[in-house]
Amino acid sequence: MTAVPLSCDRVSAGYGRKRVLHEVSVAATAGRVLAVLGHNGAGKTTLLRTLAGLMRPQAGQVSCAGGSTAAALRSGFTTYVPAERFVYPDLTVEENLLLATPARARAEAPERMARAFGYYPVLAERRRVTAGLFSGGQQRMLSIGMALMRAPSVLLLDEPSLGLAPAIQDQLFASVRRLADEESLAVVLVEQNVTKALGVADEAVVIRSGRTVHRGPARDLGGLDRTQWWELF
Ligand SMILES: Nc1ncnc2c1ncn2[C@@H]1O[C@H](COP(=O)(O)OP(=O)(O)O)[C@@H](O)[C@H]1O
Ligand SMILES: [Mg+2]
Image 1 (cartoon, helix red, strand yellow):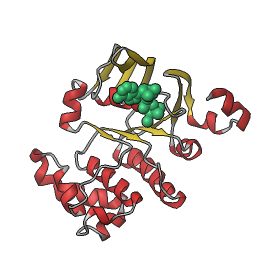
Image 2 (cartoon, protein in one colour; image 1 turned 90 degrees about the vertical axis):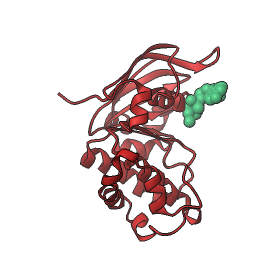
Image 3 (tube, helix red, strand yellow; image 1 turned 180 degrees about the vertical axis):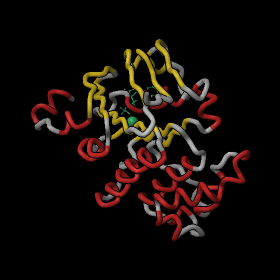
């Protein structure tokens, strides 16, 4: 049996009276990457926010092995890395990573930091440099590193490759795969970069106008030609 630390069942969610997601069901599995694909405005970020416990579903259930979604977010069981890179620009890499570490886990900070550096060696090289001087890709790596300092079971990533150069994107996608394989993280990867996301994902769901229009093994989608893609999206 594979562990499913976070899942949702027929979840509908939105803003005020506006319903954005309609009965979406997904499961995040330990050691696996779930790609969530779809056009701009499809509801991908809304789904991540709902899974993270930042939004309450209007209908349906979110089930989390770390307690309520809010408690899981607080404890670091679930971590959410939003599309807007968030780092403290005036602080160094080390200071950013320490600030992201829960107080109760301070003793484990050096070990966790070393692990994060293993995925993003550039952060180790620049550990005493202030984050504001970093490239977009390095800031993105730092924001994922900050999530890792919480020793999560679930990592929710919103468009990590957005605005990055192709070579940096490749490094990032490779690190996402390793995080699932080596840390047994359950990763939910929201992406516009369909080909690269499918390259590292195990499963994929496609959301169109807030509804799931496809789900299945990532490799099935990798085989679609352009016309089939357009029909699906
Ligand atoms: N804070 C908000 N208030 C009202 N509507 C929102 C808000 N955030 C997103 N939306 C709307 O919800 C829909 C889905 O948005 P979003 O989940 O961000 O899509 P995606 O991440 O797939 O681009 C869009 O129509 C968007 O305009
Ligand atoms: Mg979005």
